[in-house]
Image (cartoon, rainbow, N blue to C red; front, side, top):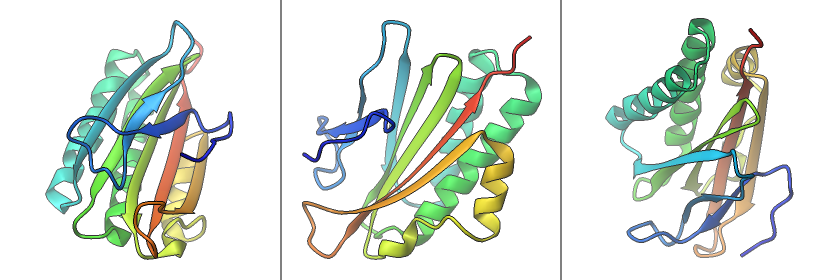
Length: 161
């Protein structure tokens, strides 16, 4: 597997039952880091589950109510953007992590469109206004020639109280 930068706190490894072409999320954490992984088919009705996981995590991790609402909207936007460019037979693989007071969501799909990771347009502006950082990435899929792994990563830091 390709070496990932330290800025990408998510790496891939194959999990039991995972789409072997996409992989599932794993992470290198300090002892206080926590992570949660979700993988599901790319059907529009499933987007609510991703939004709800993000909202539930944010509430349980003691984010304020405005941040919870922002994170739910951001997770929905990320999933919607990725489902729009995903292969119909792939899964959306989401990893959620808390590290040092920052909640991060990394979502990935397999797509034939290398430009599926878009950093311009209304959706990108919406995401930028809801979270502290957004990163888009498209890399060639090593298991499916001609396909790409499209990844969007968002992060939001807890407010200091």
